[in-house]
Length: 186
Image 1 (cartoon, helix red, strand yellow):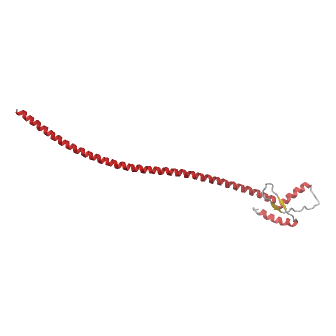
Image 2 (cartoon, helix red, strand yellow; image 1 turned 30 degrees about the vertical axis):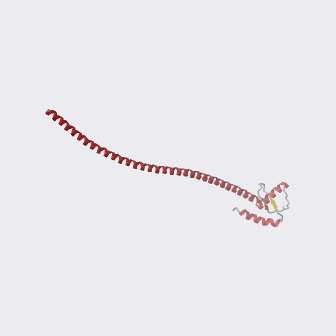
Image 3 (tube, helix red, strand yellow; image 1 turned 90 degrees about the horizontal axis):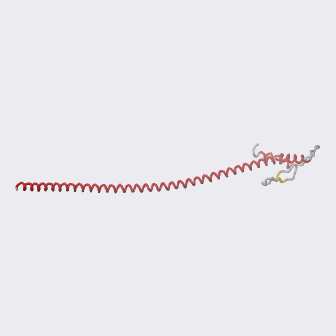
């Protein structure tokens, strides 16, 4: 039996019941949910055997409810309400999970932005250091050139001093020989 087969059976029962009784009764549900109209109950048939009054009333109302299909309909409604509540809970859980995901993604986004800013600063620092190293390399090259120039000057001055020393030594040698030659002739 499918989900809506109950309604087919109910329609068939309604046609039979509608012919036997013309009145309509309203059925209220105890759970304050919207009420709906049920088909009229069939009139009690007079038989030669009559059970006690209590049993007749309860049997008759349960028999009528079962003929109309109200109990099955109420059971289906209750099951549908449970299913809707369950789906609602699933939706709430999905919303909670989505909210958590959104928060996690936002947190990760903030962390990644912070990392990106740090990497940008590191990159900027590296560029500044590279520029500084290039400047130092240029300065060092200039200092090396200046040192080479100073070394060349020093070597030039040394050569000049060596020449002067040689001249002085030659002159000292001449003076000595002159003195020796004078002292030896006297």
